[in-house]
Length: 101
Image 1 (cartoon, rainbow, N blue to C red):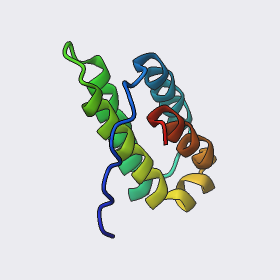
Image 2 (cartoon, one colour; image 1 turned 60 degrees about the horizontal axis):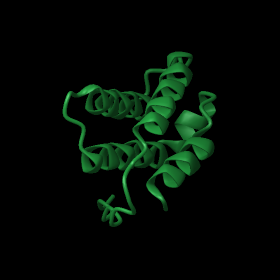
Image 3 (tube, rainbow, N blue to C red; image 1 turned 45 degrees about the horizontal axis):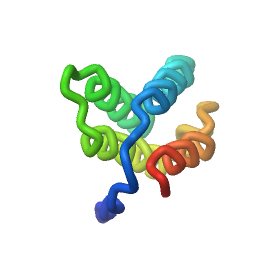
């Protein structure tokens, strides 16, 4: 699958909203028992985004790229993740809202 171009930034990212999203994702992913590649990719992207948020130097474009990576991980594994009880559509919509898409 070809990488999609990341849309141009539409303002600054609200780090508090992203942190809440990351915590919710971590909670939901903790209840997923399968070790599928799609679920592991999503966990890895969430962990990377969490690390960016916890960095002493936070850049909006780093957080934006992390959100796009999480969204793409959801989109690529939506069936697997949804089958495991994670609300993929809700998270994809929330990421889009945070990004101003």
